[in-house]
Amino acid sequence: MLPIPPSRPNAYTGSPLDRAAHRRDDAAFIARALGDPDSLFVPVWRSRNLMKGVAEGRPEALLISGGAAERLRMAGGPWAFLGLWEERPVFAVDCSAADDPLPLLPGSVGTFADLRQVAGLLPPGEAAVLAHARGLMHWRVKHRFCGVCGNPCEPQSAGHMMRCTGCGAEHFPRTDPAVIMLVVRGERCLLAHSHRFPSTRMYSTLAGFVEPGESLEEAVRREVLEETGVRVGAVRYHSSQPWPFPSSIMLGFHAEALDEEIRIDPQELRDARWFSRAELRAADSLGFSLPRVDSIARRLIEDWLALA
Image 1 (cartoon, rainbow, N blue to C red):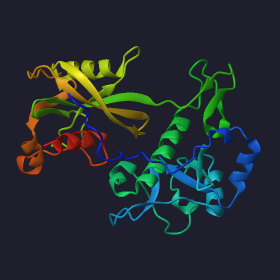
Image 2 (image 1 turned 45 degrees about the vertical axis):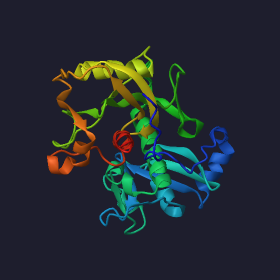
Image 3 (image 1 turned 45 degrees about the horizontal axis):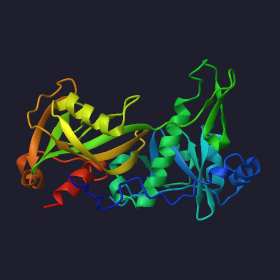
Image 4 (image 1 turned 90 degrees about the vertical axis):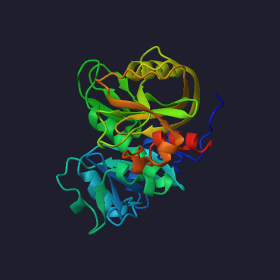
């Protein structure tokens, strides 16, 4: 099986930021940047990002500066330095403690929305920055206490490390690797409908988290076998996609099936089927749907479809 190259970048990639990691421990630089009216702040409220134009179908990311940014910081939530955007410092700030964060912002500035609902419509760089802020703020909110001894942690390195006030353990942001794969045999591919899918019509690629001591190729073969009973041979890497919902990175593959008999795990899947290219192209008329356009699952399918 020949590798199938990605046709274009995945959503949430292509960040315009210079992460400037060497600046995170420069306390003087961070202090100046926090007080600089030209610095930009990316607000996150209960895992939602600030945007305008969402209702009109023309979403744009909203970054805050000046006095409005100071009001956001005074809300008392965690913050972190994301990097430099055209030399301007950029910070994420979480304002989830506020029941209504909009009064903290300039009038009629926008609304907080789920990034997954609009990522396919945002400019790629904006989607990447919003995803970066969302993922890092989720980690900060969820890691206030030490997993070793249970004592409170305090932020270090401009929000990129949490140090335990008790045992001194250092905790860093984690990203959970997950494999996602389009399984192919001949001119058909294997798609499944999961209990977790919000749409009752959607069929998508198989996916699962990588287990300790497991290679990515081994994870692909294990997940496919566990969920569908199909054995996989060759595995070829396609591309990756940050997926901060809440804290994963999706590692995409095309995989070659060695057999076609499906025996689903009913705890994981409602159904799994082999689909031809013609069926995928006629999904709507046949009564099923494909994954969201911003997902790597959709990209894996579309790039396979483009071969013929």
